[in-house]
Image (tube, rainbow, N blue to C red):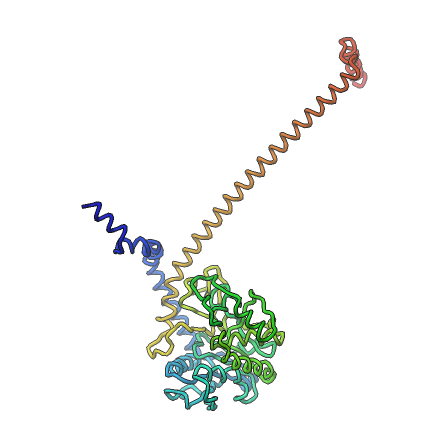
Length: 434
């Protein structure tokens, strides 16, 4: 009877097997989460109170030049979720900026009209009929300079949420024809790691290190440009452009449109952006600080939020006081969506657990390093001791050999009378010197 029960538990799927297979490994984190729940709730309240105070303070003061020349611009067209996401983005940006907010759209494609509240100007542009909605939005985005008056502009994806004043400082960071932030969805990212998400290949998978070279190979084949696989590429969710940006944006636009017809390429704009940056030798162009495009991917188990330090992609840091957050994994189209409840709270709850896990890892690594250093030191000590013994052995053996050679050549040296005479001379010399 008991043997049959044991056999069933071992061989067939059941609650006990599932617990051992999946839940047991997560039990320490779950216990930590329960233990830190009180502190997590306190941190959630502190972060929310600080954010509300910053929003209540209103926009930061800006110079007359920035006020007159700089504007924000969004691009949206197509499904209802995009216009609803735009509404959420404008609702958060409006109270934190004194600059105008513009929107470029193709109204004939919009399932639902754009809510004009908080928007200063809507630019309606007819997009090519043969494009789908996604392609049309990329056409508008990469060629956005063609539809706007001359000035300094900051493009924002509709999933960019402003969270604190001072967002206008972003306009101080354009040192080249354009300015983008690094595409850091996790603490470490690069072209080869992004490649499976830009190409129609079977390389996408799970894990932080899954990558391939297909994007680099396609860029080399299509444009004759060699891009290093470890280059940290730009994120297109936020970028600055101005009167001198036309050459860059025109090339980006042309290449993005051309890629629509390439079966190897997914319908995205970042592959064309990488190729354009390297073609025009802008790969080292100064980048926007992470605080102006902090990518908070809720699927990133290392994402952290601390009331004092701010946001980080990993408990090891670096930490940022984010002003513009890129929330592409959040349901911004939901009218009930809240930054505090839907983003800050879950991240704060996982932060204490993840930080403790990281500290445990650091302690284990430190102990392991010290143990390995001790082993290495002991091995080096044994080597030094062995070398000293060998040196002593060869020294003694050499001296004895030399003495034996002298004895063999001059055997009279060992006569008793000679040894006494030599000893007497040494004693007498010492007495005279005294």
